[in-house]
Length: 357
Image (cartoon, rainbow, N blue to C red; front, side):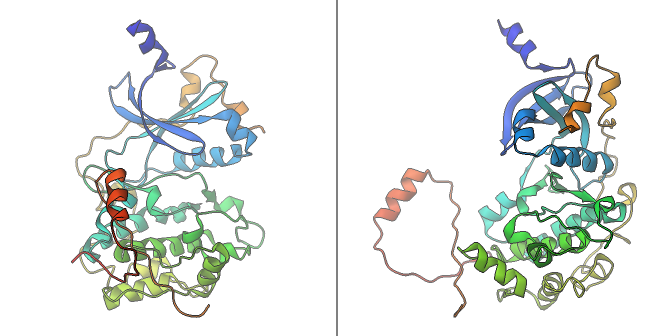
């Protein structure tokens, strides 16, 4: 009986699937083991029928193409892609850590030194623009931390390529997460993918140091108006140099917004040792782990030649005053205990500001 269960968990004779470690709208992520090498991987399983029904097959194809192109120490690596009649399987690098978002939720905000560490790694990864790849959905939830505390950019599902631009040289697809999306994307005008990603990086940097979003409102239309105007205010604990960086990244005019070449020369970014060029290849990056064992790298479609009957071609057919910020509290106590405690507190307005010292 146990042997039969184990056989059901074996995928194409190459991977053994374990427990679920993550779940999204269109996919589940399992802990899996490569039976040939013994290495653990993250196996993202996407239901093909649901993806086709929702018209997301083009997006899945983009994710495969984008991840195949990128080998960088700060980008989650795609080892290979497999498929059955009903599912698509992505064997990806297993990041043994947590989401950067989870860390922010626990500590509230980061010291500038820690924020700078993660921000540099983010910029290094996003500089795939040199190869014409734009992420378009950068946010803390898509930034993972490995066991050594290094940042890994995940989820290239909304990525696009320089080849997709129209004759005007711009992208025209509106996508991304509302609070992180650039004003020119909201305006449904043509936009430069690199500049739009840099806006999102600016929002992320603000969140890392402030602990909350620069643009927020219960009403989505009102939030979009703030984004279009660049209406935000840095809290008092931002250093003047950090404030300057965020302001240049969150310039609502994309033509004035700072680009990577100028960003890496700013005093705040250069405050301590950084790579001589953020555009350097992964092999020469100072962020790459020295002596790290080379991971197995296979073309995403290499398995076609190894497994009989595995044809992936069918996959691709088809007003007034400024609002006060709300305080968010993270606790390890059970929900029932927290609710019980709150019910015993007299309801009255409270104004407070807490931050890590």
